[in-house]
Image (tube, rainbow, N blue to C red; front, side):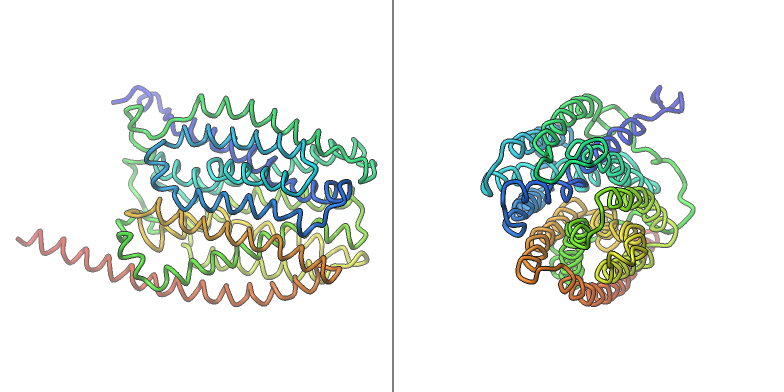
Length: 439
């Protein structure tokens, strides 16, 4: 028996810690403050928001492409080496951004940023958790990905004050956004070296089994099942229906998230007030992913996924109806929108595991996260194009509310169909096992 196991310690706890730190820093400082940079950069350099945010599209396209080939890449290089590459790309992206002046320079930075996130966020974390943990994977994923919210709380305050001064009083044309990117690059370097030093690809590399391997499962939520082969999955209509919903939800949530802060500024809300609103948003985001993971382990995919979708619909309604006089809707948005965000992170690996099983998990997860990120790539520039054409984000937010409602209904339908298919598959497996025993 392994000495770590005798001592009651398992290296999976170290893996959990480095995954948590990675999400805290990579997403917390690399993604959460992006809308804080948007206003400062476009105002100082005289860039149009819709054209500038194509850099986000480049980021998302880069992430989507790498996610699409994730299954084969992780088999070839291993998770540890891919995380090392991921941090290197994040550092390069920040340095490129800090010296950029034109659209195309920001677009190159976006490509590097997307490559970095492909190998330091949801996809690689899902793969690592799948190998190192067995029971309560929803809760483990939820806690790790919740680090994004905690990182967002810290970065929202740190980055805003780096850009606008300790009292956030610097005017936009004096914002120090180049310094913000350079300091973030240093942070990525320090954390990246620590994470890569501690990370290990899988338990067997250390003579261990996954944490919880010998535990007796008492409930039926989130149980592992063998699942279908990739050839079988590609013939199932609900693979495409649920994948389409994942695309649409990525489109809507990322568009909403990207425009929310500029929309509040356009309404005349002060920067200090917006900091408070988004600090609460980040705090609830931290809790929401944990709640989503626990909800999955306790109630299953359908009620948890549906609750997140309903939160997205309410968020869009609040943001579209907000005014400078009725700021209560902004506070509702800051809280409820956080409860919707697990749809583009923790819920996707859990959805794939529940709908299709373990046999083709890494490959299908790569596909779904790829189309989700393609939704980001389309949603962000189109949302800002609507602003350039109409002078307001409000009409676009109303349209997205209707589309999100339709996508929610379609997703529920796909899960109901998949459940019947899974039960039939498991019944057939049980029948074959009993026949084999009878022989």
